[in-house]
Image (cartoon, rainbow, N blue to C red; front, side):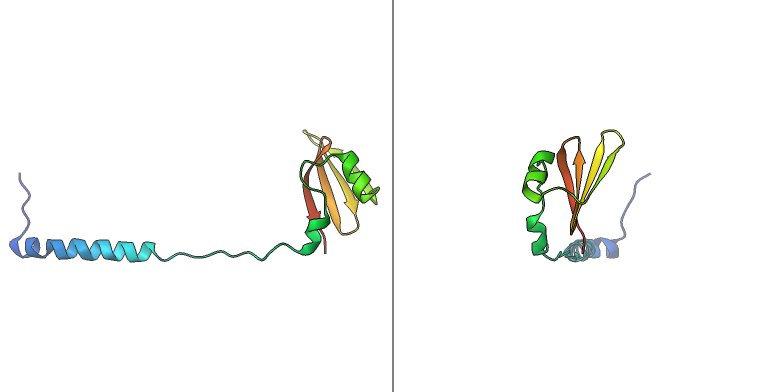
Length: 99
């Protein structure tokens, strides 16, 4: 059993393939662009990731509230006016700025 392409279709095959390639390429060129606003200036004055608890307290003073460690590894949270600091063991893992 052999497969044969009709003569009329065979003559149009290169044009059909070219149209398919151009159509595929044009849809691939369309993409969404995600832009994010710059970080607020207030984030510059918060503890950086990897800073120890002692350095955070020395730089920012005593927190207004110290929440106890939760989970494993232990995650501790300190609250300051304007931001909260999350520690894993004794090091900063994240700082959240509150508005």
